[in-house]
Length: 320
Ligand code: NDP
Ligand code: GDP
Image (cartoon, rainbow, N blue to C red; front, side, top):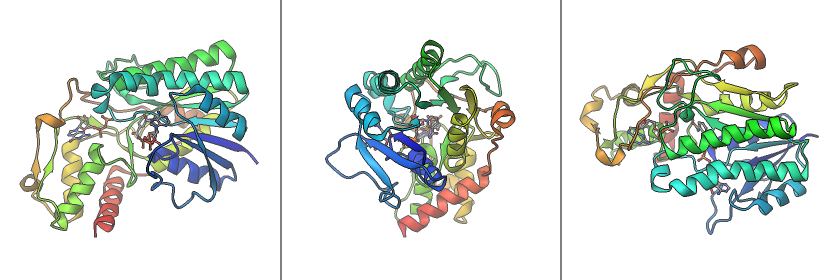
């Protein structure tokens, strides 16, 4: 039986990855950081099947202890301060978690067992102010937030440990991926939740920043398969994972309101609100997943329309 350890097991992606690996017959371990309240709503349905260990990205010895206890074949580093906007309020902490946290984990792997295969959750935010479209593995990085900068560090330290110590380390450059389990502060879930609440007369308005930015939005459930596939190859490498299609925030809003039968979305939406704008914006992201398709045999399965419908319907159910 193969063993996998996932950091950030309480997060969106980890919940889908854990389900996926359990179906593949893995023994799954997940790390959480200590908190005074229980924070397991995304994994409550599978928590009897996984082993939870304590591990904080700020504390290298806790990561090493988790590796010693779990003895994993594969480690998926999904833990991070993952919200771009917060990274301007907590730039140093974001660097500690999202950048140096990767080195702490890689160091723990190097010391405990350098044969462990490692997946790093890199991000399309590294492309930021894009220099070519669509963005692929060779596109130059120009991050636009402390989060993006931290992810660039995480990406390159992963490449460096591969080149320095021959560790089987892969960096998955994933474009935005969403689901009914997405955090409420991200724009997609903020919209789906507000639309459901407006439909049910529990909320009057949806308040947003700019409606213009475009993202390549995929479904998280599809993307975790790509993470696993990267670690099943003969050689470690880096891959862009995306849908190859992008849509504006406005399109997301329009479609989400349509799902609940509201055509006049403007009536319920306020935009260009200053408090939801960012000091520097990423205007346009679209990924070329050609390498992943060619080498991993991976393609996205869920369309934009299906994703929006899935999220709005799930929030309607939850809010009822
Ligand atoms: P989430 O925000 O849902 O999950 C992040 C996880 O990291 C949570 O379990 C959180 O724990 C944990 N965490 C935060 N800080 C620490 C810490 N100091 N020590 C240990 N654990 C910590 O993110 P997603 O599931 O959406 O994303 C997974 C990874 O993929 C992240 O690294 C993210 O940056 C990256 N990524 C995500 C994309 C997306 O569109 N979803 C796109 C590209 C990359 P807690 O519950 O305690 O807060
Ligand atoms: P990101 O791509 O990781 O920053 O994911 P988000 O879901 O947080 O943001 C996606 C895009 O939506 C960004 O360009 C945001 O500026 C834009 N956006 C517009 N209004 C909002 C809002 O109210 N909240 C969030 N989170 N993003 C918004």
